[in-house]
Length: 301
Image (cartoon, rainbow, N blue to C red; front, side, top):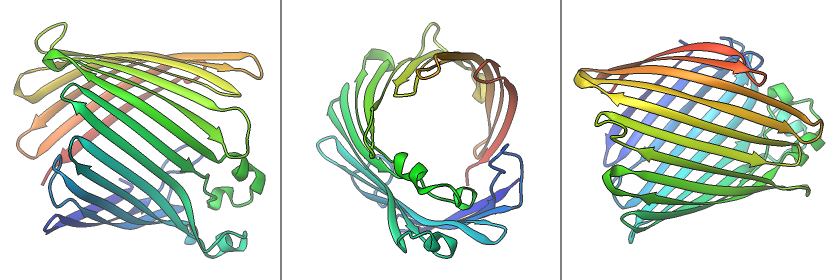
């Protein structure tokens, strides 16, 4: 247990929350008490999920290293759902710099990321999406002594578009592609993905999920296919098995790395409010070689 979060509905679509805890050690993700995280959240969803109207999620977040500021910022997400079938998403992060962060020459208030997306449900079985984002790498306590050039060269702007096609019996196909351009100039990075969801196949209680993702850039290229099958059993049981592969190509050093992975998960509803999940996963190969077990319990109030 490394943190706690709580929220309370205030009525009329408003919800107020707070959270606090410790961040894992960035070197190996082990538990650590050196980095503390705390924040508050405000959420507005007056119309309820899926209805038209304006929604807002606002979070003030602070991260500290042994009491010294690492990053303090506000994250804001705004959604708008209207007709006919149009929805918009805007997300941004604004950093407030003080202490050593201000001493590096940064502005007291700085917009570090901005994204804008749109989705249009053209008809019941066809939808289109498009998006733009502009992100800057953020200097934190761990990277406070890194040269400015590393942050300037890592800035990216991106465009993305996609299409969703729905067939009979819940079949769904998603296709999307994007391009990211370095702000300092140079070669673009292009990426794409495809996902096919086939419910009730190859049996009435089975669902098939197939996806493949790929990218190509100035230094690396990669491909990652995955296949999963889930079984919806009686009494709230869901069993899922999945597997896939990664393949990375180093375009500079002509070095290829690949790995495969397998995962098995069991999920069970435990009454009206509780559910539990257990997942065992293994990765083998040059890119990754590890085994992991995840246990999760949920309670919905």
